[in-house]
Every structure is written in C-alpha cells, then in structure tokens.
Amino acid sequence: YIRVPDSPELDFGTNPFTVEGWIKIPPSPSCATSICNGGFRYGQACDTTIHNNGPIDPNFSTQGCTMGGSVIAKQSSGSNPGFVVHTNTNCNNGMGKLFFRVNDNGSSGDEDRIICSPKIDDNQWHHFAAVREGGVLRMYINGMRAGEKRNDGTSIQEVSAGSQINVDNNFPLYVGVYRNGIGSEIPWTSPFKGSLDELRIWKKALTDQQIADIYNSGAGKQCLAPQKGSACDADLALP
Image 1: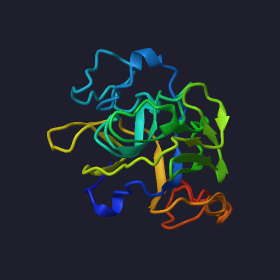
Image 2: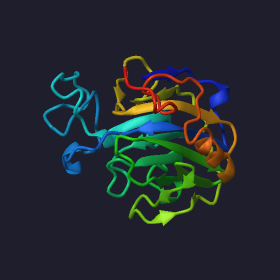
Image 3: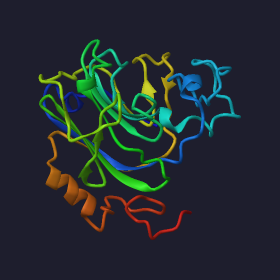
Image 4: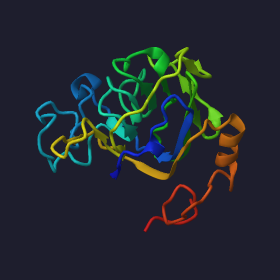
C-alpha cells in the first residue's frame, strides 16, 4: 500500500476535487455478506474465526472478500471528515462496486453523501472517476456517468447534499488500505484485492468531456508510465 503524509495539498475543504484512474477487480467470491460483516481486516476472508485485529492468516491472505477493499482514503473513520473510495458491501448488492463518500463528523450513512458504481468485478481494466463539486457527487466508469444509489442500486446522474461538506482533516492519505487512526499502533484495515494504475487526484471537478477525453485518449489507454500488465498497455503480456 501507499501512505502519503497529511499535506495542505490534500485538504480540499469545501473545494471541488476529482479522484480518477484505472482499476481491475477480480470476480467477487460467493460469500455471505452477513458473515463478512464489513470488517475485512488484515486479509480477513469470510470467516468469523479470524478476529478483526488479529494477525494475518496465510491461509486467507489471498482469498478474502474482494468487495471489502479500500482504493483510496483520507479519513480516520466513517464518522470523521474526509473522503474515501472503497469496494465494499455498503452499496446495494455491493460486491464488485465502487463506493465514493465524502463526510464531516457523524455523516457517514447519509444517502446524499454517497454514490456507488455498477459492478465492475470482471477482471478487466476500467477507468473510474469520482468527482465532488459543491454539494454534488458524481461517479464515472469508462468515461461515462455511471452512478447508482447506495440503498437500492437505482441509476442516477449524481447525488447532492445541498450544502458543501468540509473534508479537511489531519490524517494521511492511503492507497490500497484503510487506516482507522493516525498512530503507528493503529492497524491498517480493508486491503484492496485487485490492481490500480494511473491513479490521480485533481484539485478541481473534471467535466464530463474531460473525463471522456481521458478515457478515450489512446483508445482508452492513456499512458503516463506504460509497463507490462498495466491498464494503459493491454498489448503487453504480463511478466
């Protein structure tokens, strides 16, 4: 995973921002979400015998619930200010969907501060973009708006909180895991199981056209750092 120390450059306050990049999610396992229970700590699989804060179990480290991973997050928990893009069970039929939330203190469950994507757990590269502009959230998949309501999966263009949410905090930004705290003694949680490429954060709300242009650049394979097996060079074989 990647840890980026807190910086004023990453504290967007009430200003617009965009998180976008390429993501590849393997097919989600057929495990009961009630058993997984949203914990997903230290490589936890669908097995309640593995405690949330326990050590990594080598028998489960590669076969956990893929919907429980954190793509990018800058917050200490869902009840504190910040933003997060997860793959988890918080979306309707949530396995293999992206979950984008911005929140201030105590607002983690508000429907107007969350937007989800359709299922993309097909082991193929997809471009995603999560945009916050004012009180509005938008989700894009492969250059097109592709938002869904969290509670019922209804397709939507955007969600609006009606007011601007201040996401400033003093926590690091994490890519690939979620961190419930800032001290070194606090364990990381929710490892993302999949692949990420060309991940970028913009200090502005990208428009529909700009996002489509990014996706369509090079036939959907915009390359900043092409390498074998990357999203932007599908013609190269894996090493």
